[in-house]
Length: 109
Image (spheres, rainbow, N blue to C red):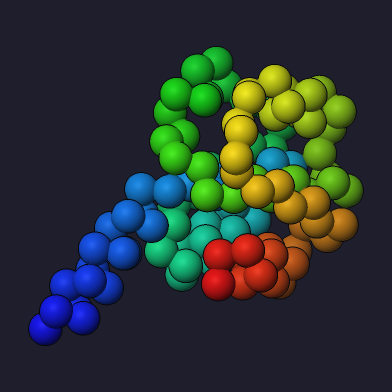
C-alpha cells in the first residue's frame, strides 16, 4: 500500500512538469502529446512562435526538445530569450514521434 501511495505521489509531481516541444509538425501535436503523457508529463508544442506570456503558463519545465529540421530561426531565438535555466535541452534532427520517444527515454527514463 505504501509503495502505491509513493507511486501516485511521483506521478502527481511528474504531471506538474512540462516538456516543451519546439518546432516539428503541427499535425503531429496529438501524437507528440501521447508519447509525452505516457511518461506522466504534460506537453506544450510551439510550432511557429511563442505566444506572449508563454513562460508564465508552462509551469516547471522537465525537458526542452527542439526539432532542428523544422524550427524557424525566429522561434529558436524566442526560445533562447525565454530564459529557461536548468532544464535539459535536446536537439533532434528528426521531427518524428520515434525520435521524441527515444529522447524522453534517454532523458526522463
